[in-house]
Length: 118
Image (tube, rainbow, N blue to C red):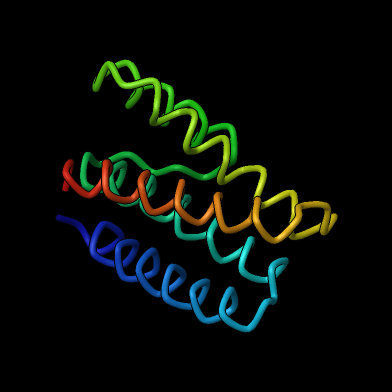
């Protein structure tokens, strides 16, 4: 595994831990961004393990679509879509707390699915 493949999983877990602290403190907008970060970093980890560098949001989305097809699991793209809405929530603060909490569960599910590929 190259250096970036080792770097990303640590970030995914770090962001997930930080999101849990922010959720406990009811800082839902900041938690939303940490959750997005955790989702993006786990996707980058899987890609890096395969020697693929993802530089843009478009690259992330295409790789998620590729994983969805490879795994024959539409949940992969659905869960990543939820994470993307959390990213949007960071900028707009539009989600009620319950929705952010649901999003946190979706990100945990996504991480669980993708960690199996590592």
